[in-house]
Length: 160
Image (cartoon, rainbow, N blue to C red; front, side, top):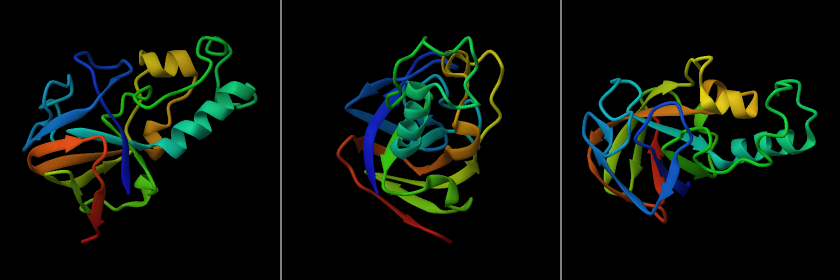
């Protein structure tokens, strides 16, 4: 599968900004990201662009029951990084990869450590969009061997 976007922020709970490359640090996560080193099982977050596109379509049509009334109209579309994911991918249903799956991303070796997450009510994404797909479709990985990751890198996984 492929990387669509690499995203970083220096504050938690907000949308992340795209960058051309990141360094994954063993045992910590994305160098320079607010989440680095905070939680062992949530070092790096991944979300498929296909899920962002589905959420964006629901937002545009305003017909999604999950969208809160106060959220409608605040955002017109969604982009990579808007769900605060570090790595946006294309070509694999991430949430179907079991915990323990090894993923090679650029120079780094990682493993799936968690599927989904709990979304707190003060989350900017939930406030702006009315829903957050990360609890259902996002995954988290732990960095086993650090290295540079670039936006054009391909990813390979091995289910153990």
